[in-house]
Structures are given as structure tokens and as C-alpha cells.
Image (cartoon, rainbow, N blue to C red; front, side, top):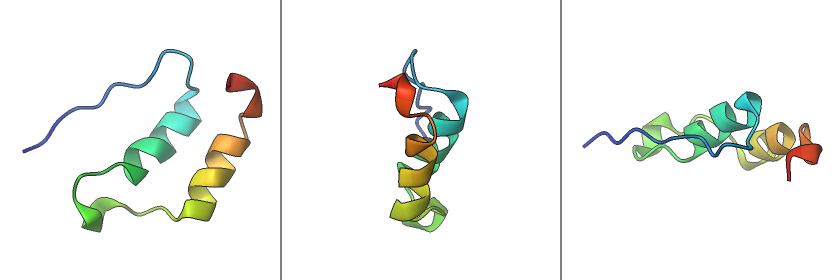
Amino acid sequence: MELELKAPRNLPKRCWAALRVALAFDPGQRRITAAQLRDALGAEASWW
């Protein structure tokens, strides 16, 4: 089953790309580390 996730309105595209990979249903498709996700989200600190 493949569900299409939609990005939250206020989330920058760079953050959404990283978060979408981290949330992949198939563990084999989760090609991002916690540190990489933190860096992607932290790079856009003003979006909170």
C-alpha cells in the first residue's frame, strides 16, 4: 500500500523532502539518518 503524504503548508520544501524520506513506510526506503534529518530541519529554524 502506497499512501501519498502531503507537506504541511508552512514547511519549507527542503525540510519536507528530508521528512518524507524519514517517514517512508518501507524501512529500506528510509535513507536518512537522525542527524541528517536534524540538520535539514535545523537549517530552516525560522519555519517553526
